Image (cartoon, rainbow, N blue to C red):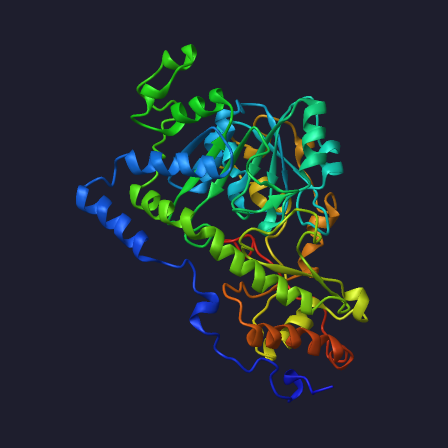
Length: 441
């Protein structure tokens, strides 16, 4: 066994820095540029012709009837919630491991977020805990396909149908991911996607909502879109046509839509390349103690789409209890950039416990509910313990066998020599994970 770089040996990763094509994203082509220039030259930046064409194509990709292009993913999800009739006093169940945008806009609708635990393998909503969290006030569940992994939709849909709960998918991490052969974002009553430049399907600062339900579609239009009232067909909505009921202006910028039309044509080929690279990396690590791939079982018909924000699963009990902090420190020394953790559990943050957002005189989370919805530390053990069980891996955009072997072998090297790291192991550090934008509280 070669000596660990952290202890004075040579680095396992020789190719440094990585060639730009291995990590650059999004990949810009001439059609994207030409489409944007056309919008600019026509002075059509605030129009809707390009956006409606993109909506139609995006909906067709998912086999859905209706799409609403929004200025970001948060707006798309808020429109889905309003469209589904979520309002004051309603409870909406959401996995605690996700980004703020999955659920925070519910505050503005007067709804209450109730968090559920996650599955330790998929990192998505645990169907059993979802059912445990249902009350007579539960109106909907938010299903987050977390970092590309499709949630267990068969079980979730069955539970939702049993209890008459609406299903809203947040597919912002999972563009193109399949669950048993069917694309995510096409299962629920509605779905929302972020399309910002850091996501797998990257077109700029944009979002989109999908649904097969005409009422959800029309309610979404009334909530946050100017100049679309001519599309309304439902009487109670037509009665107030001409103004956005929610007072919001959520129109997608046409330059983003123009990029999106070109991206739809090439996304499949790009993600096939990503999938080839990421699966090769994980295949080479199959059977390495303590290290497990975060991906669906091969042959299940489920896939990771664009592999956004990829993670590996870490099981320290398989390698003598080596902390994830020490493991990642050794990885970084080998030339493999990695850090512990992911999004921290939302239910323990003050925003869902003590903060009064709108000046009601009490925490916003309980304005339209009682204190029983507060979930203290210890209430969702899998979500709370996740930061010591996942680690980041590079998001490889191209297949390059030599480089992928170097990176996979760096992980093997650290595991093979893990006993040498135990002596100075200080345990898991506070560095693991974060909430995004908020690091301490």
